[in-house]
Image (cartoon, rainbow, N blue to C red; front, side):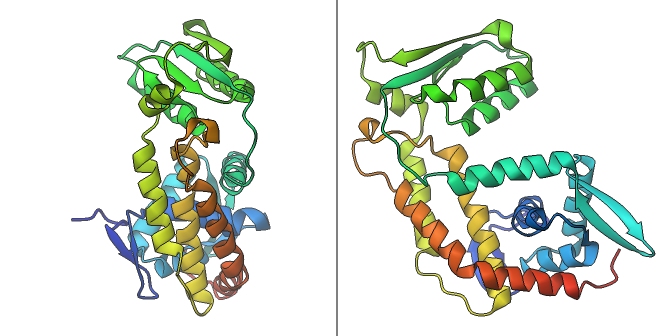
Length: 289
């Protein structure tokens, strides 16, 4: 049985079923990034609840996701009479701006590889599970993969500053070593790639994305809103999944660039209608507090 606020196949209020797990929290973050962040203005509780309702999220789960986002310091609320409105905090804006930049720039441009790798050797005790999880999450988001225990690699030496900042923020400089440079020619780089990243699973995920959105057509503002939220929600996982390896390290054409083209075309096609529906929600926000 699916957990409250998420379903294995989530039906929106438009009647269309969207495959995959879509939690209230993740959909709220997508709505905030797509519609609240660009406007830099507060939004009524009623508008957010109606937006999530149109995505198939029940009110209880929607309220829980708002409360959780407030507890985490992403949102702050204030009361105007009997009504409540929500604003992004500075931390919330920064998080969403960074995520938006990564999502929309991912796979946008190809670059010629200079043959250099960034290699990171880091030791975090098994007892520090939370720190290990944070490190893995941050390094994966930076495009790195782990071919062996304690070893992280990425074929992009220009990521050194980004990775250095991660190591510094987590306070593990004294248990970390790093190198940049070309392969020494010992062993096969393809074996490193195969050990560091689950390319088959990533390729399958791209295929599912294209199948879901490749021929999807919508009519009306609400359908466009729902489709765009699910489009961005589905796409935003790929910057963390796909290291965007150079063609020299792949043995066939990679589906990422074609999937990115589809994402941008669909987003552009639905953007105006989706934004119009959001304006409709804000203008007609009910008195729910």
